[in-house]
Image 1 (spheres, rainbow, N blue to C red):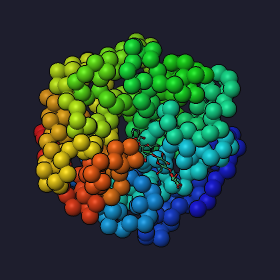
Image 2: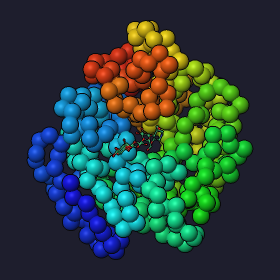
Image 3: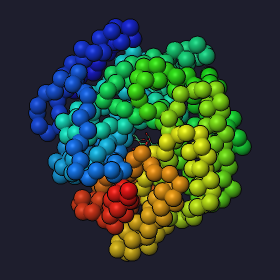
Image 4: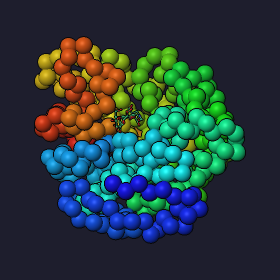
Amino acid sequence: MSIETHSRRGFLAGTASAAALTVFGTGQLSAMSAFATPSKPSAEGNFIPYGAAVRSDALAADQSYREAVIADCQLVVPESELKWLELRPTPDQYRFEKADAIVDFARQNGIQVRGHTLAWYGALPKWTEQIATHADAERELIDHIETVVSRYKGAIPSWDVINEPLVDWPESAASLRPSIWAKRLGPDYLRIALETTAAVDSDARLVLNEYDVEYAGERFSAKRSALLQLLRSLRDRNVPLHAVGLQAHLFASRTIDRDGLQALLTEIKALDLDVWITELDVIDRDLPGEIHERDKLVADLADQFLQTVYEVVRPKAVLTWGLSDRYTWVPIYFKRRDGMPNRPLPLDAELRRKPLFDVIDEFRHKA
Ligand code: G3I
């Protein structure tokens, strides 16, 4: 795979003439410039698009998984390939080949792509810790966003520009998660990231993506309040933002706060912001082991969440954080104590549809 090394100026000038790329499994080359993604023709009419986070290595190596993505997804989002850690091994290198391969695969199959993510505390390469000044941090963040967003202009129509900006138990919107961006730029990093993205691609939908706003409990209520305060402050300063992403990593051990979540959604709507369900899955660590019972409980929790949302707002899309249990992040942190594999996603590890698939499919066809 080619590693593209660019001086920033040279790269920006040369973006449009970027090299060709191999599409997964077909061996065909496709001109990078033909990134514009035709939307998948749909006989389904007015439905909520469904998609999933995907992995470039699995798409390249696993034909049955690739075929399942093509069959079931109208959208995909690179699970890691558009993060700084994958894109930026050194300050002067951009490694686009993995992200390009996903974008090209999606284009070849009429699937839309979401971008994830431009400003996050996570998945940052070590060298970013050395960013020493306000000016350096602003330049690095702006250059990265200008380089990445301009490359995929027309191919990635929505970006998680800001990901997980708040600490887990925030006192207010000022309780920003520690990161090099917050450290060097303070809360202004959100404005810089959003304004830069809008300046590069005025058509892109800009999303602020957050988790843990779905549940009952003091901590989650605090997060909902802080998120709302943050959204209002961005709105009051006319910072460009179009939507809120609810990650919706649902924990079976927690209770969905219907009133709390619906109050948040009502306020988000009042701010004229759309809602995306961006990373839905169900952490089944504490559910019974028996597979049919567990799959039913997973589906019921997702159904309860989706119905709670839908009573207030029709999401722009529903994405799960993976399509199949064959490729899920969940066991990294939430392995089951009985040692059984986690089953958080719509397809099982053999790519068979589960009740969660049917719940999402029924939901997205609501008028
Ligand atoms: O690519 C390397 C590989 O070369 C190496 O051999 C391997 C072992 O060290 O690591 C691989 O990188 C891993 C990467 O996923 C790609 O698979 C990282 O270690 C691992 O930390 C990374 O985890 C991802 C995590 O975000 C951090 O970026 C998870 O797969 C991904 O599901 C998770 O996704 C996040 C969203 O971005 C934000 N919302 C929460 C969600 C779940 O944590």
